[in-house]
Structures are given as structure tokens and as C-alpha cells.
Image (cartoon, rainbow, N blue to C red; front, side, top):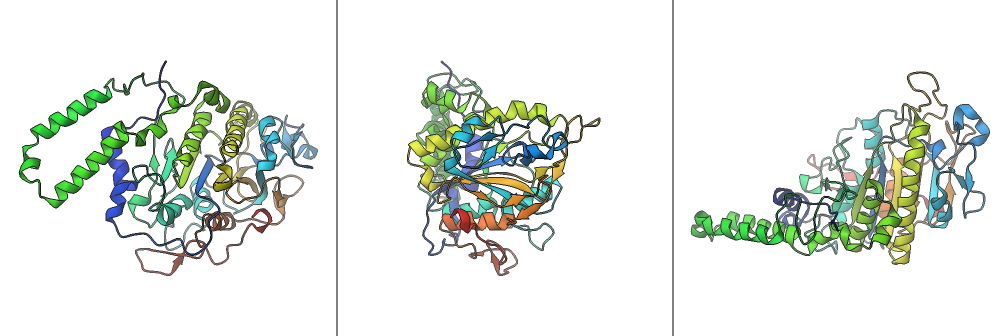
Length: 433
């Protein structure tokens, strides 16, 4: 039987350690998280790359008519009284007591890059500094004390880089996330330690021993401080490849029944990998879930992707809850914006939806967030916020607070300015905290 893993090369592991692992301990220590009491230990961010349609997920509008809801005119009831969601999300409907929906997110931005920047940082684009995203700030405050053992970076993206903005902003490169690459749903790696290149663990070790025997310069300069640091980094890299630390990415250690529950697709298996990383105490994990930029044939795409999302997310909620981890793990589902409430039926869109930043949805769960709640309301067509606008900084500040990070903590920056983790205007999601 094959062993699907997220596989690192030696070069990848060295880069990983240089940006987020133990090599970070050689730098000046990050700021402390303040005196707030933390309810959450980790965050799983489900990043809906491209922007999902709010009317086709968590804010259905069947009464608006076919030009708005299209064929999705039969939303289903959830376990939460009065709450309905898309008909293709039956498993999430059964888990509604574990999450809350924000139906009044807004920033008014319609371009992918600038909208992504705003949602991820809580800042408006075009200011003097390029701000770090939420994951980088969490890595700054929580990464050094994370119980994940130092070898595993504090900020991981499954699986591809987000690519819409500079994640670490003005913070040093070590706070940039490590993107694993690969596909946890693909069975590429054989049993008994055989890696993608067909090299066994033992052969890797033999190669390393031979390399050190041939490295006479290292032997001659064994007291050199810089060479000692490189040697330490190499040892840590091999530990990640061949030791226990790297096993967190080996999904073959999970029972087939569990893997089937999540869904044998990239998103489902990424959710499973995220749960394993939470168990190791990694503070921030992003699942970069692409394919939601549905300018054309939106409804055909939704029929393919929504069942995958439903199975992966619902299982993640249930699995974390069963393991006693949901109470200490924030789950944040969102894209950079929503999509046009009115469907574009004409060619070349053929039932597509374009970008919409005036009103969209987010979902939060766990880590101190209450479940079974709805925050805010959109108008009858889902075009504008009718009640309780929520801005990205409000949501991000609430997540920081649950993690024990003061939303007004000072961030180090190259200009020496008094820069806070969130803008002074940021609010708080008191309805669900």
C-alpha cells in the first residue's frame, strides 16, 4: 500500500529551518504576547482563494429570484434555528452548532491582490508600510513558544503559496510561511521510507555519512562558529526528513476510514494534515483552497467544489471536537471578497459571478468563538450590508485576542514607527466571543 505524504527534499528542509524553524532562535526574540488570557492555541485558516460567492454558500437568497440565486433556490435548514445554508452543504448543516457565520463582511475592494491584502492584514492598501498578514503576526508572538518542537515552522501553508501579497510584510523573512507543496491526496510515496526520488531512509543516511567523510574542510575548521551553525541546521534538516518531526506530514499513519471521512481529494486531505499539525501545537496553518474565482459557469463549479468543501470542513469540525481540540483551535473560513449577487448569464460568462467587495461572508469556529450564531445581515439581494458591518480588522483583532495577543501590541518595523497589530479603529466580535 502506498504512503501519501507531503515530502521535503533536503534543500526544502534547510530552507524551512532558515525561515521558520530552530534557526529563528539565533535572532532577536519576538515581542511577548502581553497579559491577555489565551483561549486558543492554534488557528486553521481556510483561505478560499479567488473569492467564493456568498449567495451560493452561507447567505442564500432564494426570494431574490433566479437572476440572483440561479438554480440554488432550495437552501436547507441547519441545526441552528432559523439558519439556512446552500443545499449542497448538508454535512455542515448538521455541524452548525459548532460555527458562526458573519454575513456582513465588507471592505469595498474589488481587485484580488488588494482585497486579499486587506482581509489578511486588516489594513487598507496604499499606506506607508506593507503590513504583515495575520499568520505572520501570530508567528511573531506565538512561534517561539509553540509546543511543536522547534523543527516544524510556526506558520505553514498547505500546500501552495497564496501569491496575492507579501505575507510577512515589513517583518523579517523568517515570519514568512512555509508552503509545503505537493498534494496530500496523491499516493506518490512507497512504503518503508522510500521517498519520491526512490531513495530509502537508509540510503539518505549513508549519503550523509559519505559526504561528511569527504568534507575535509569541515574537519579542519571544526571550531569555526559559522560552520557549526550550518552543521546544526543540517542536523535539524535531516531530523525533519528522517526523524519523528517529519512524520506529522505522513498521512499514511492515519486509518483509511479517517482519510475517507475527510474526502480523498486535495482539500479534504489538507484538512486532515491541518488537524495533525494542530495536534503538534503549530500556531497557524493556512489551507490555500483555490478554484473560487468563478467568472464563468459559476454553478457548474459550485456543484463540483461545494460537496468537497462540505465533507472536508464538517469532518474537521467533528474530528477536532471529538479529540478535544476545537475549544483551543480557531477556524477561520473566508476569501478575499464575495461575488456579484446578480448572475451574469450572457456570454462569455454563461452564468458567472464577478468580484464583489461591498458585502460577503466569513465563518468562525472554535478557540473561544461561540457556535450557532449569525452576525450581521445583508440586504434582500446580498448586495450591501444591511446591519452590523464587520471589517477585516475587527475579525483579525478578535482572533488575536482569543490567542492571547493584544490587538494593540506594538509591531517592530524598519521605520521605527508606533505600529500596532490592528488599527485603533478595529472593533470586536462581541456577539460570538
